[in-house]
Length: 242
Length: 242
Image (cartoon, rainbow over all chains, first blue to last red):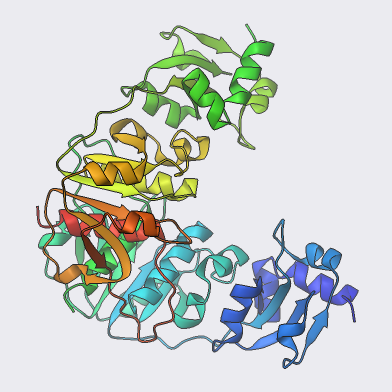
């Protein structure tokens, strides 16, 4: 077997969101990441690998050459295997627990880190605004490793969602209430804003509480914390008392 | 004026650590970052810019063309200015306060995030093992923005340093004491380990306490938190009671 023209075309197209949606597929690369997805609830569509000795029990495996692997990989030094997995059905909306909502996060690395944090802290649902970077973007997939399989992620119109939800809604702002001195509920929505612009004014009006992480440095020039590190600290604060 | 051969050679060489040390200089790029360094304790060596209207009050400015800027920039879309700044004199060793020590952090992005966290949380000193990525690496400089100017950073032989220091020394481990249930002192050294290997066994034997961030997810497969997000949570824990 080797790679057909149609397979090459399909894999290449999946680097774009519209073709991921159209085909309902996304790409995972490398032995470690692919194995995490194989051992998860994700359903395999097909696998392409140079050395198939670990995949003999799997159907839909195409053995390819190193040169073909280089063609379909986004890596400079690809690692044996590329897998196409099915994008799971849309999750149902959860109405209790700690829910994290993202207002237009742009950077795939930040989204990847945040998904791993949700997995670590057992966050019940991750809500993404429609303009947040796609969680099946290959950089996000590679950054999250298996966490993507264990976190319930939903893309929504954030205004409609927040308007509908009957939970306390926390805005993270530079001048909110000191989070270390705030009593935090176990059922809540925590909203984190865009890397450059923070939470948009359209979203702010739906939020019921505001919190901030105090700055300890003597001089007050530090611009702000990166959104992923701020999320880490706030999820830790919501969960530490439980 | 335009770029001389020697200037081009100098700037290009500064992308390597050995030439940064030899010349005692590092590179900062782009209007925002360069301005942060100009407004800091860092001393300017020389500036190269396409539009010099904001730098008329500064000596040692060379006006260059867009093509020359592209040659000396590490960016695909460089932003007007490249500055060479002097690496400051070695800091003195601090013996109290909260000190963060890094055991071989490799990734420039992680070091950059950690330096910003030190700035935010007013950490008294950042100690780096000799094999930790250089803080004057251009990726670190760009990621830290002005924070680099406000954090005391020292590269040391970490074994000798820890052996000498008379403070409680905290190891961050996966199976340490629950950090949320531990009383943390205000004078201490917190040690964070390498991205792939954690804290090395040579370093571990100097540490007096061990802490960990509990995992909340129902399933226990999440590998670990990224070192920068774990540092964020732990610095927050050390500082939140102050």
